[in-house]
Length: 239
Length: 352
Image (cartoon, rainbow over all chains, first blue to last red; front, side, top):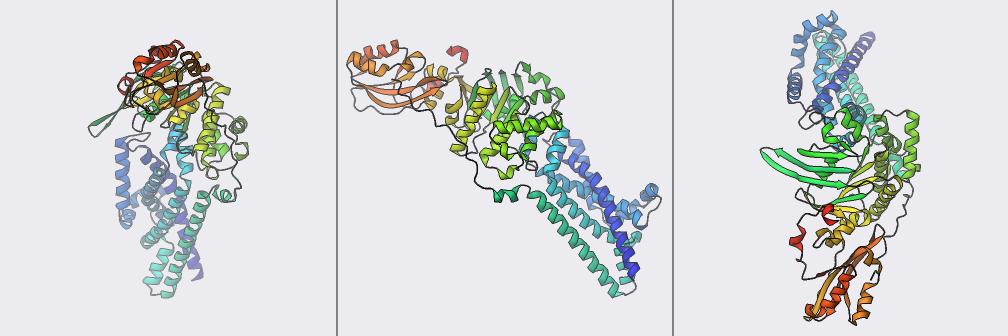
């Protein structure tokens, strides 16, 4: 039982790690494009915005089980295998990209447009706006988005496990459910709860650290420097 | 330094057209502080955003430092390289500061230099220099969240100066600040204007701002500039609404057989004690009902409302004396006076 659990845990971590990695890698540009191609934005492009938006909606409404099956030929083409933890990374990534894209879009929308304008007024172009304003300013929200993505992918990886993906989901299903090993099932579920909680706590901690940039020291600030001001010009008795 | 001709901006939304700017001709001379004042919705914000083409005018031209920005352009809302290069030499400060909360004060000031691809060491040197100039040398490593409103605006000003601009655009830079901080920021802008020869265009809805630092002013209403000129020129213009706003005088006549006149001081006469000369020469008792005098650009200017005994017919000679001294004298007949006349557009050329 011990090696069984260890292997399954490693498989789950493998699936979640790589699918998160690729989903973020692809999802951030998708989110940036969604944001910038919107009406009134810098790269306003109705066609691109509509196509990306439609793809994101379709991807997010697809039942994950069906997505795995539909993608099997594509996965085999890409990796040579369609099952196991490696095979599961492809549908997991594809399911998560629209999710990440929308979260990134929402995060960027929260960035004050005045900052974008300030960068443009300095002579900044699209790249400046993306890399020096939008992404750094949205960093706390982006980290929160990644946290949510990781947790969603942990849940998805369990579903992938039930159809040949391996990992904790497969363990709970094959041994716990089909073989009535209730003890193992409980252990597996508890482990998933622990992993999800740990990820959430870590994510929250990073977000808090990023969002609090400067404010901790602000509470310790002593006596604002008063700037001496000139008296207004005295009223002159000219007459 | 900055000239706009026939600047027009029309917003279209859902079939409706809103004209924010309606043929604005603006003339800002090199090295002056130029204030555009108007109520919200008058189009002043659109105007200043058109000066660096953050907002594309529907028609008309914008020339800054001899360069026709509207000709540079670029397609759609994106600016091309030439326009971006021009913008990097036009500083801009904002009402809400628009500092990046993710960067330290120094890194905020370095941002324009990063855009200009200045080397790391030069960036740091320049940023610290500028922070010293605005009096925040000790805050370089702080984050914007740790600063007060006035300090944030100083950082905004330092950032705006990083590209060695000839022109500084100020979009309601003091509107979010308390009166004392406003004064210190205005003093800073005035100092920069004098020390660096910086041309400053500021928009505001506060007459006090114009009064404190502007050499010239324009009044905007419904997308048009209805008056524009130096403060002295505005004062010299009969019926100027800006002059009345800048130097408001009040006071009712105390009896029927009195003559109430508004005397406007500008130019050489403003330095001589003409009222006491008048009293001595003609042996008349003069009451001062109200006065607003100020020193603008080193000259004493302002308006005064005085009351002379007797009807207007009896005071032709004393009034003639005042006019001889180079003062402008208008019969005060209630507050509505001159309102109709003031809508006539005033250009600098006309006033000279």
